[in-house]
Length: 142
Image 1 (cartoon, rainbow, N blue to C red):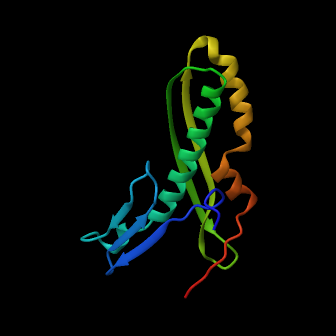
Image 2: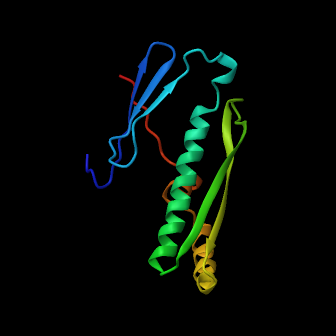
Image 3: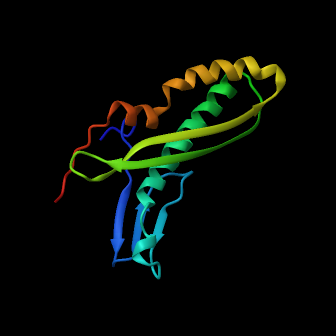
């Protein structure tokens, strides 16, 4: 595996309630999802939230980098991702759309840079354009 072209995340399950994701990242801590004491009807949505988080982080960070690399001073940058669910032709629940809402404030003199970056970002970021174009996924169960 070429580490420049591949990213790996590892998963471990302990019992029925605990799930662990090992990120192997200096900046991103490992995640523990613990459903202990949480009723079954309140456990859904975790994967969709992680997908939203990944999409939102990628888009916002890419926008921030685009602004910074062009010399803009970012006063604030916040965002929200909203996933819409629907059904596919097999009646499986799926994410049908993700809306990413970003609020960014730059100095007045940097407004033209923001407008240029707004146009550039219509193409998305690594995660969002990969999802939009369709990601080939191979399943290996050993």
